[in-house]
Length: 383
Length: 102
Image 1 (cartoon, rainbow over the protein chains, first blue to last red):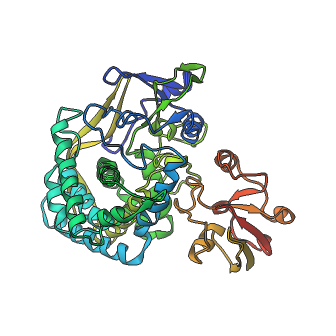
Image 2: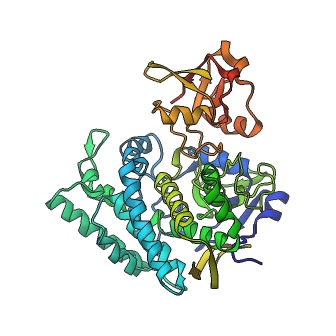
Image 3: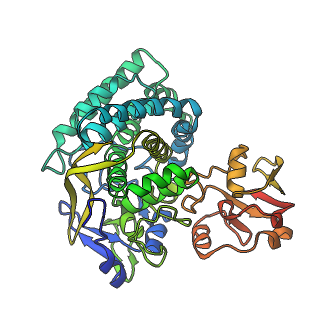
């Protein structure tokens, strides 16, 4: 099997019963697998709530390592809407020309860097750096700040072999506390300062609320962006004609990016907590138990996508759920899409071919299912 | 060439001319308020929702199943709803009037 081939472990369960089950630290999860059910579940925030105990909707659960509520991610309407109203304009800044020019400068420099080397580990020497540096633009903080984030490694929450590492999480939380205090002492034009000044429902955001937004911004866009970029590079490496096609036909780039994001589904699933007894595919979900919206499974649903396991570069209709759906759709989607757009742009300008030297897969263990979500290591030579 | 009119949620009326591409792209390029087109037109984000004025429905035709499923979960949707990334600009659209949902 090719390195860039990502199988669909959910097919049988999705077709036959429509749901899957997994345990997670003794707080089991019913996984919704069908496109229609996942979308409905995401839409129905009253039945499937996000505003549960902080950390519980995340899989694996972060209840034991975090008390801060992530905002707006773990808040439901109507309050959720007020938070999104102040955050959305800031998180749409990647659409601005100046932002994209700066991002292009960053990514061009990075591609020049990897071209000059014999081969590089795409995860640690390309995608992690790219993601961290791009985050300085999203936060509007100095570029040099990225060096520290890069030094934290690929996972803010996870270290090798341990799904949940409280000590690692504390590094991030302490760092954010420090930056918030600095922004209070000396306000600037970064996201911390903007949030500290923001008013929701007639009240200024508390330090804890600012921290909740910042944790989300750091954690939500880290593994996901790294996987999206690295997996796409694996694909271009093994399908050199695809890169040539994107070079020759810039008009299909947007479709190609959405398709890469559908196929790789960088975030496998997101949980919810049932507020009432309910059912999915005739399977009972009891009140106060967890369900998950399995984006990765929905994206391969053959009732919606023709040839779902094929990466069709110019797929026209592509109602993928990689950025979620409905009220809680991904806040960082504009930033992520812009990163992908510029990665494709720069690769087509500067790189002729790439070769995989070696690769180590990153397989998620989800109870009955094992899903490849990316790579621990991906050694590539850029030509 | 087709003339396409948008009525935004704050009741501003803007008429644009287009020759090709999608109505969503035309709206985004001209900064029509309420049409974001986040996914670039692959029917994945539902941020280009418009209501076709009833007398113009014959110009736009009907939505595909994927589009209909998408709209089904939109609280503002009605029988005249369309995602305008799925409306290709042709002569047939000339004179159409669309009310922006958001």
